[in-house]
Length: 269
Image 1 (cartoon, helix red, strand yellow):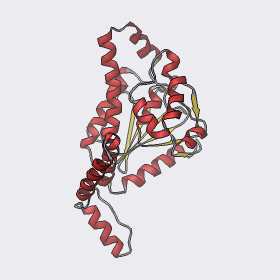
Image 2 (image 1 turned 90 degrees about the vertical axis):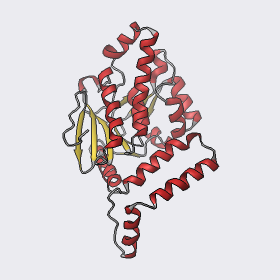
Image 3 (image 1 turned 135 degrees about the vertical axis):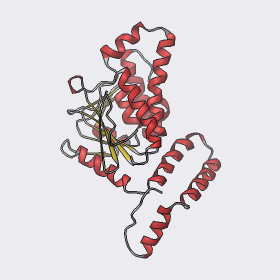
Image 4 (image 1 turned 120 degrees about the vertical axis):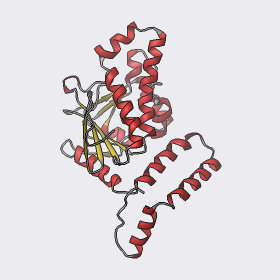
């Protein structure tokens, strides 16, 4: 994947200053996901593991909404007609998108405005950081369409962000979580106005992109791996990860900059 020339078919991609921006772009339907967009985003996030030029990612939606989730006509309708092997193939494919988002080393920032429901809420959840407007409406609404709340890793990830009790409420009821509630609960890191949303998300991404990106990738990896580690195992894993980071040139650059009373310029190696 060449980030300069990458032209996806089912969403928009913009690359500048080390930051890749993914925009879900079906505004007439509030940016729903399709079989094809799921697969193309999954493949993109998988490839980003091998694209160090991309140092941070912003995911957003066009025209005032993040995403309305799976397209009713292009996904929900066909699912009703599928047999069990076909359904399992689909649910594994959607779960693979979350795996790819969590396994790519670049930090992902979700810039959320308006509707953010179903698989859209999952994509926001699977990101590393989330910024929203006061108009953001987030719902894990699987229960409301007769499905379990355990979709695409929701029962594993959401409780770790907002706590077991709050996650249980959202997953059992499918109700909408408002933006202020989401910030209070820790789902959103920050609230921005509509006018400032993308600027704030891009500024945060640029800050991360200018940091020690190898070390940032190590942090993300440890955040993933330590979910099911004992404390002793986690401390040992972090000791090894930090020793590796201490061998990087960025660590040396930071030391020399500190001695010279200058701001370090990191290069990700």
